[in-house]
Image 1: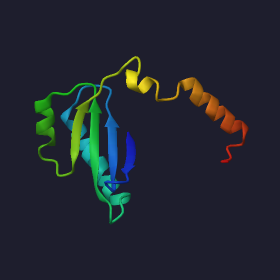
Image 2 (image 1 turned 90 degrees about the horizontal axis):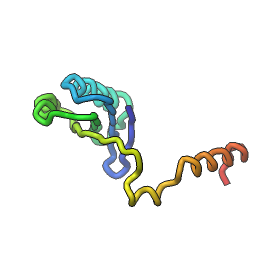
Image 3 (image 1 turned 120 degrees about the vertical axis):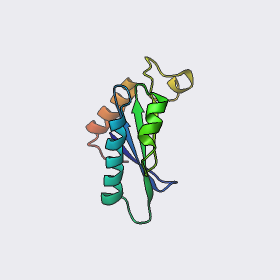
Length: 114
């Protein structure tokens, strides 16, 4: 589970990742997380928290029924695992090796910012 803050929307975004198929009870669990973030973390001037449930597969009709009674904004989407990054991204992002080099260099420098 991940918690993000969208600076332009001024709201938190809860992302829940499920390794399997969508089940209706996942919507209830996500709704619980949204209510908890709104009650415990959200500032008074923040917008209501958004929930995103990512599942390996979903049945659209089941997802629609599961979300139909929910008052909080949430969505369900499928994800797809890839062995390699899509072509436009593979040259724009650092490799694992480059990240490791940067982290090691930072550790050797004592983690101090320049």
